[in-house]
Amino acid sequence: MAANVTTSTLSNLMQIYYDKVFLDRAELALQYDFGAQKKVMPKNSGKTIYFNRFSPLPVATSPLSEGSSSLTGVAMSSTIVSATIAEYGNYSSVSSLFDMTSLDEGLKEHVEVMAQNAGETLDTLIAAELSANATVQLAGGKSALSAVTSTDTLTGAEIRKAVRTLKKNKAKTFDDGLFRAVIPVSAAYDLRGNSEWLNANTYVNNELYKNGQVGVLHGVRFVETNNEVTQSSTTTVYHTYVFGKNAYGMLSLEGQPESRIIIKTPGPNDTSNPLDMYSTVGWKAYFVAKVLNSDWVIAIKSGATA
Image (cartoon, rainbow, N blue to C red; front, top):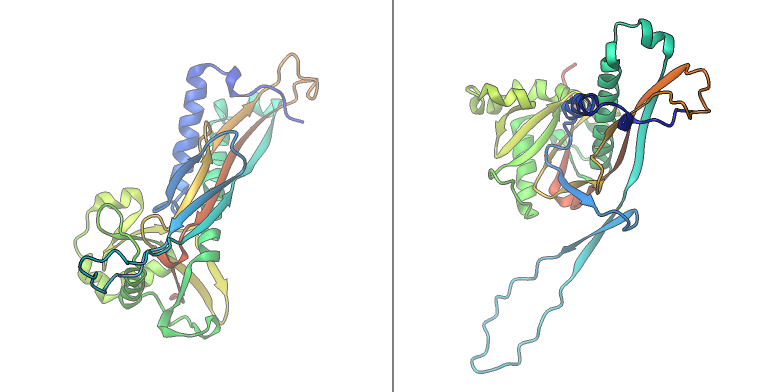
């Protein structure tokens, strides 16, 4: 059992330091949140939140009759999307001997490792939600996943096709007027060698690379990830997600960040650790990711050059 003392027993400066290191590292690990709508769920309102999305009305192309009020109204329709928040977390025990002899002073490395684990966990949860609910586009015009080969790589033509689908589905662009995409490094390797990409990104702002962004093509801004979503078929198939604004969302609980560090140290009233043999370092998050409109998220499934 872990001790009953948390970071609240640490000095304010130490707690702020741990939280900053933790959140900085967790954010660096996150890439699939590149286009997520971020919401906070109110406390004491249950575990499930509902999104009500109204459907567009049919266009009214018939002229009104002059002087007549006999127009028949139309009924509004909507789609309900629900998401249920859940707890995630992990921890490690640190022996008192390790704490006294290790070069990891102040458990900084422990905090950083936990931060990376938290970021990668939440990132993978978002990716899994996108994978399960996105509209699928098979590279090379293939009609079955088993038909996709390693030569059906990600190209500029595939991006144009995804953008066309998003526009036909009336997906919204982000505030900069662009759609967004999360691309695995294996697929990015091929796209970067494509002539359409080279023509569009010969001169690119190097500042973008600091945020993991790799360029813009056909109205899509790309961010690269090594947390690749793959499927095993005739070849390894890689998922690239191209999406519009408000296509998917992330929810956290009011009063809590997406994730937080928890350090427990032995205390005088702790009976579970009578000889003060260990402390614990861990993280916990209240979180859920949800696709809000599958028509606005395109999963391009392609092969890749080995």
